Image (tube, rainbow, N blue to C red; front, side):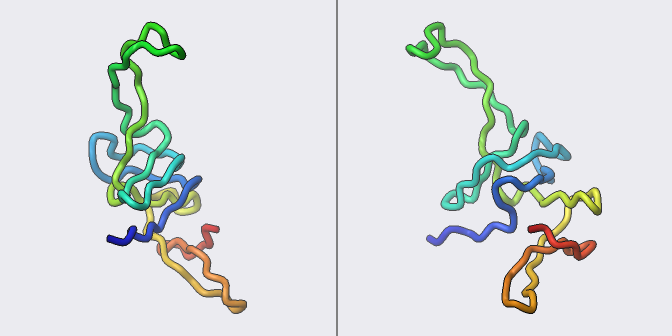
Length: 108
């Protein structure tokens, strides 16, 4: 199975459009194309019970971010102030750039 092509990439600001964190905004910190998932700052926080280690001798309950499916997020356009679809445009010199489908502004 080939990895899906994402319209968003690391460093983009996205809005969650489905799930328990619906409406939250955050920056993408990590992308896992093989699984179709990504990590967003401050979204999908889960609690994990950890055993004591040398780094954390007591162990305990740790909160951390879990992966979100790419289908549950949309790019956030700062000009439109909304979640938008992303398109591609080929410039005169042959370069491909991502554009906002709503206002047409270049994203890259």
